[in-house]
Length: 400
Image 1 (cartoon, one colour):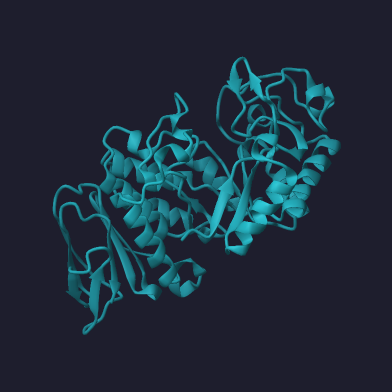
Image 2 (cartoon, rainbow, N blue to C red):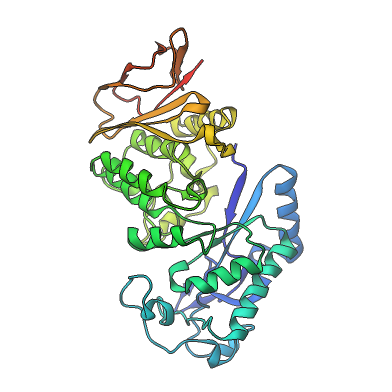
């Protein structure tokens, strides 16, 4: 099963603005208290303790770029209640990283905190320390990373003893790569992979590009710390997008597990949830699904999680590193040689696809099975012709 969860920002939030509710947690008003809609401080402590007792880590979402939409009435914000705590009132109109506009103007008209003010920088760091020490969180997901200068992130990272931080750099590939490479935080949410994987499996773009983004990731200080995802709260869910299919969704999810990095699955995935950003249905509550355990994606994810644990893919050992085995426009294979496992996927799942793949980690005399289709077995060899029958992608092969 899953051994970590990422929860919404927990600090007190602005209730509403112009009829829009601040349910999401990104409109902070008090950086040193918890949102009563989520429960009390003790409830949060108990929640984290219970997760830890089950062997589950808890990562909390944080925002240090801005506060709730209070205009210039900063008296509503604690402890940042003075105009000097904020940048001038301008708006972000372009989204290119490392610009003064990005660093100093308001995103979506949200008052922009001035981290060059020593008081602001100190109190933001103290708020992170308070969260970690009071509630015993294991890591942080940082919102709007590229809107805060890297030196401020590095200072905050050091102030919390370099507790794991993965950051949102929601821009072009170059911005994301730049933040991942400079090491001001532990890692980034892997938007370059998100874009390429969606383009390949939703729009039939070349799967060859998966190899390019995988190679680029190897230049990062910690490629195995990147957080890989195919859905999140800021994008239309995969199954909402025209051209989606459950087979392609399964292929995308499985690839997150096999490539370098930390697989991150958005809540409701196993319930086949759909929904769009335009009407916030991509953030619908989970309980309306009825928690079904009777669909193909639920079964597949249960198998995949168990396989991931059994093969110890998540240990980060160099012997379990990802290696590319095949790429072309419609077919892509990656291996975990140390785990004697390989994944092949196609973006044409309604058609049979065959490739003769060399330099495999399988040997003569071994039986090679296909996860979920154990009646399909191969005789192991270092060169094999691999056929993904129609409807069988993703194709996970392993020594059995």
